[in-house]
Length: 223
Image (cartoon, rainbow, N blue to C red):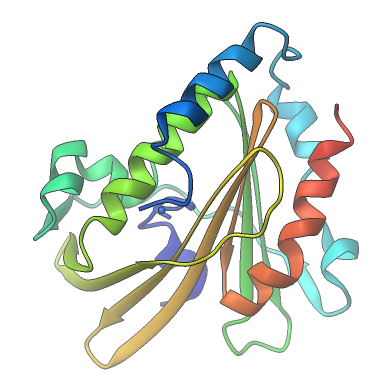
């Protein structure tokens, strides 16, 4: 199973599922986000978000954009994490961020080796974006280990908070470990709130670190 198909099981993930949080539940942060909404620009459309996604030129030579995979329809359930169980299966599959204005791109290195990275953009009020991503990130890291059942497949999950760079208005970041039998994959998911746009980059930790600032910069030109 590749990084991107795994990250589809988490927010942001995201798509992730992918994500405590470094700033998501601070009441003062929520108040600040709410106060900004009155003067914030209107949310960007999905078409506008699509133009601000990373492209092959941003990632460098050797990366190709991959077709979006169709949504999985297997029954998904969470075992051993009450906070995620309470939010429901959508939180575990990355469908918990229910914002109508969104865009996504996924890339794979042509040389293989599991070098994959994905980006998601969402636009809404800053307060709604902050609350939505914060709730899911906090639920995921509330349990160091748990299991996700997708159809007949059992995935052992591990999560831990990791430091997010000082970008944008708010930041969240975590490392996710997926284990299926003897196969183990580590995915980093970092979310950055920039005004009324949420940027989520997921993939191998090194690729997320290398491309996160580029993703945020492309969004910032919209304001």
